Image 1 (cartoon, rainbow, N blue to C red):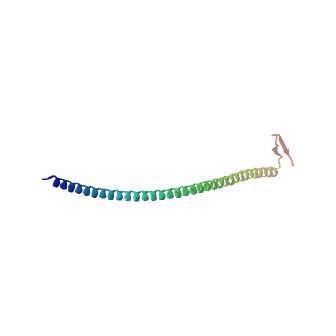
Image 2: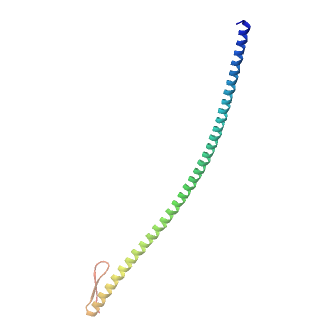
Length: 140
């Protein structure tokens, strides 16, 4: 072959190689654009997920805050109610103790009256101890 034919073949091979390189470059650019679009969609989706998660977190935090406030309020109300019940029970116990003392006193007085009546009926003198323990005798 002559030199002109070789140059022509070489130019043709170089041109074919350049076309193949250009096609490969275009294909690589196409894949790069697709990868970029996918990455952008992924970033947008992730950003949306983050925003939704932040909203859910904020809502959960607000709900927890409200619940804690309600728990504290209910706890304070319950403590106040318990104190009211304790005070009522204390007063009732005092009343019962007072009634018990009054009842015991009335019973004792009733017994003294019975003894006095019996002694009176028998005609003997009545002996009663005073507060110091000394005998006091009543005779009719």
